[in-house]
Length: 154
Image 1 (cartoon, helix red, strand yellow):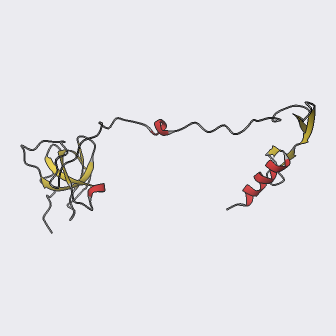
Image 2: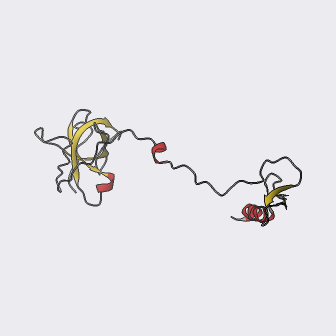
Image 3: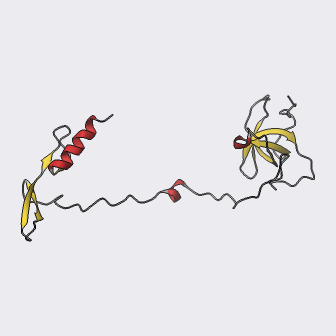
């Protein structure tokens, strides 16, 4: 097994070649400048570091001072750099919830039922039930049955 640099050589500002976590099976290395040393002591697979561009990996060797830093040129080959990593929060990936049906008959004052238009335009009264398990959910018989089943699904 090849020797990896020790903590005496890997210091912030040093030029190194690292293997990223996703590249461990292939062994492809990336060149960069150390920003932070994340491992306290020596490690047989390499000291874990964070580069100035934010990438994290294990140091495999010290880079030659003339090597292009952050070029993506590795020992195993090269790759094209994608767009620069921008501080994108998780809220950028959230989608608004889908609207489910029409919420008729909810919150109306008028007793035990809600009225819905019938076939001939007249309003028919539908029975509103309450969940016998939690006592909080209200809806028509089918909705309450579905809700009650949810209490017992594991």
